[in-house]
Length: 244
Image (cartoon, rainbow, N blue to C red; front, side, top):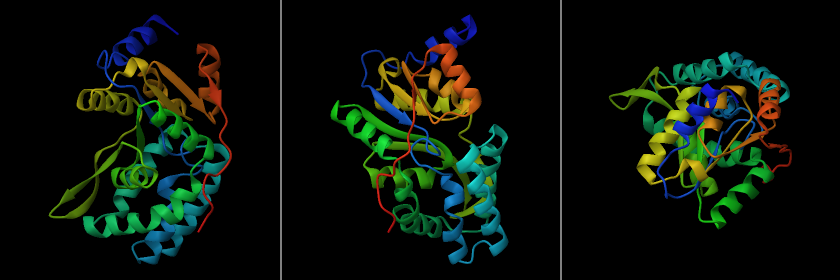
C-alpha cells in the first residue's frame, strides 16, 4: 500500500473510537449472485412500466454480469438507467413492486456464505449493513427481508410523490466510503474494528475505509490489489434460499 493509500485508509477507518463494530456488504456479486437492478426488470415488465425489448436487454446484461462482472462505468450506468426507468412512477408504486419482487427474485440469489457471515457478525453483537449502488428502496427491502440493521443505496430524485428519472445520490466509488463515515457518525460505529465485503475494484476506497477488508468473488483488478495488500479473498457460490 502506498503512503497515500495508507493515509487515506487511516483517515477513513477512524470512525468513532470505542464504538460498535459493523459489517458492510456490497450487494451485487457479493451478497447476491447477480445484478439486483437487472434482476427486477421482469417485475417492471409485468406492471407495464418497461417494454419487452428492455427486458431482453436486461437479461443479456444479466448473463454478462454474472459471468464477467460489471466494469466500473457500467455500474454507474445501471444506476442511472434504473432511475430513468422510474420517471413518472409514484413512490408508492415502486415500494409495492419492490416488496413483491425482493422475496421472489432477490432473496433466492443470496449467497449462503454471505448469510452465514451475517449471522456470525450479528452473533458477535456487530451491526450489519448493505452498501450498494442499487436503489435505496431495493437495498432497504432486502435488508428488512434478511434482518440486517440498515442499508445505503443510490437515491432517486422525487418531486410531488413521483420519481423524476434522475438520481439524487449515486452511491458508487468514493461515495461508498463516504457513506460509511456517515453511518459511523449516525450509529456510533468504529470503522477501525469493522469489516467490509466487495467484489469490485471500484470499491477499493470502500474496503480501505474499515479495519478488516474482505474481497469476495473479485474481478481481475481487485484480485491483483488484494494480492498486493494481503487482503483475504473468499469465494461465494452456494444459494441460501430456494427459488419460490
